Length: 208
Image (cartoon, rainbow, N blue to C red):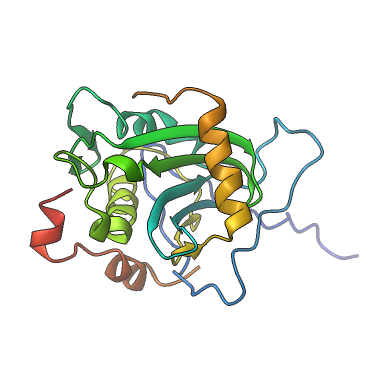
């Protein structure tokens, strides 16, 4: 008789801990691949946390999509406050910007069940607006902040993707979602992953 061997189990993430392994930032070969969908809209579609910098068809930064960020949604909202308040997450502090707005979007052509932060282009050149040249730097800073916070994440689930160039149809679809409701004011080596999201030039970091 074969001995009874208990099935293999992934050890649970430690309470208050941070991931011990992180997925690689990989170039998008043929566009972003949406997550597999489940039958019921209310279900989480995946346990993988992704930060996706979004670009308009002309290459202008449009904002960021956050997949699986249910447990830090309040921080995403706080990044978009209009009262000039700094936001602290983990070891990082974030400057307030007056041209960011956030939505929970159930269905998009890009993917489903996303938190999206949009840069309002009409005010992108005004004082207090988000510095467009820091588009990817900001995504990496959010990733570092999460890893240094007490938020419990599933090991190996945080990924910062290369910027996604949207089609005209995807851009129009996203913009329509922001117009439809009012804004809410509000698997690689760990060492390599930390190097990928490392702090940029101090001149850029100081703007964030």
